[in-house]
Image: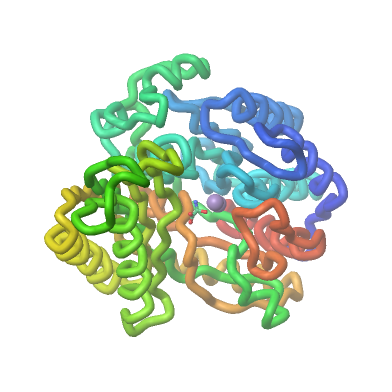
Length: 414
Ligand code: HGY
Ligand code: MN
Ligand code: MN
């Protein structure tokens, strides 16, 4: 492509900032949990931008949103791009949103130079990429990829006990859940622009990451039932403290990840719910939500097994009851070489530096890979920081990513 698609980076930054103002928390903190009032306002804002760009917008039965730029050959499967706009509590403004608003800007830049795609180009905004509401990430793309059935989705509950049906109806989404699953071939290819959520690109001074594989995420729910009691009256011998038992499990999980033999193995306990949660009452029940990932599925599963055996060991030694529930254990995905080549050519054409790399975070592309060839394009984020309000991507990083995304989309859609 000899004409440089003109990226209006100032306008894009303003849109990202405007989107960030739509939050359940005080700006600059972004919190936007799926189906919340803020989520719905954010969706309305992004859909208005898509409509203003002349895209045909529609939503599926759980709010996955599709904004299509019709191609000259409507009979061909479209090329997709996009990401998510929901945000975990205490998040920043770039995670997901760069892929949605950056994808829109890539389309607008191609429109500005009069490019006419043969294949339609479709921007996708996935519902519930974050696990905050239901404890399971990528709800929308899992259902699109038929990784999560409607029955499994209907069984999910948030901490108030509300289910998908109730919440999606309140949000104004209707239709059979079966209709969310995409038929094979619905998309020709799919590419997602995202911040790296790691430090490598910035450290190495490289403009772009061409993602070759996406790590395999798993989540194990652990519930420890001990015996409560008075913090003063109950002496230490014979206690069945659920929280000290949980503490042993948390450290065992950390040790298992650190001793896996690979730097790619990570494990986190992000949720620790203590009951009754009174300072002078011995914890009788603890719920742990654990997050275990690796680029290698077998290694990841060995850490899951180490945690399960630690549960068995601690239960026996401490006389507590421990139950585990596997929330998800997804395989890693390998990105498509044809899309990677198109991205590489586009980066060279745009004069940007790049490197191949893995994605340690999971993304909707992990599940879109079930129905189409996928790849991801990373831009740096300052200090590798993400899932924090100080998450930051410099305008020149974003511009470089959108520029190469636009060129890649033009290649794939020609
Ligand atoms: O947790 C993740 O990897 C993603 O940011 N939801
Ligand atoms: Mn995230
Ligand atoms: Mn994300």
